[in-house]
Length: 303
Image: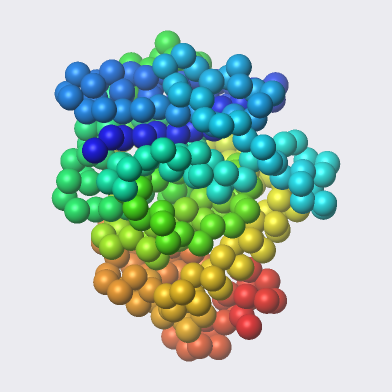
């Protein structure tokens, strides 16, 4: 079994927190690979970038095929900066891999602890073929890779979002993908929901000291990204319909374990609506469930 870990690299815009965060992410991955290889674990680090940004692929990383599409291919999004589609990153993560390989995708601003790869291999060895690890939000005063040692010891605070995904390669064979845009609200749900739907032993780890993020800027909530968020919601609504058609459970208002066939094992998420970021509000009737789907995804979601 090999571990393949992919991130998206690029030139962050001036003033973005990613100017600081991306070098930290890269340095932490290189450090963690060094620790893993000393323990006899094979780790390949991959970077996916647009052709004009291939110079951002760090030493020690394998450059994937260049990203060829961006959000500007959607007519109403032509005025936005070029942001990649998440499915294109996933395709580059799965390329040239074996069914039992362990694939890792993390957001570009997520650092990992030195023992990260040893830990995820151990989790996978217990039969979990797909799992997520929530980051810890650490202090905002760190300036870059030179502060890594201090970051490792900063326990920070738990964060509810999914930004680290680990899965066996074979789990992706059945995925229903869509064109959600990276770095925009809810883009993580494409991978999260597919993992929950199509893996056999899914688990969420919301409070492990394995990954971290400097500060909590929440730039993805900016009002200027509203058209991008609307696009992601439309794409996810269509994807949910595809998943429902293939395995059932969502449109029928059933709980997550009905969708999976077995209960999800999580330290905090107990049903489908927590995974979908819905507000439960005693969703005990079909009418209420349909109203909640409509609220989150728009008119077509409840049909």
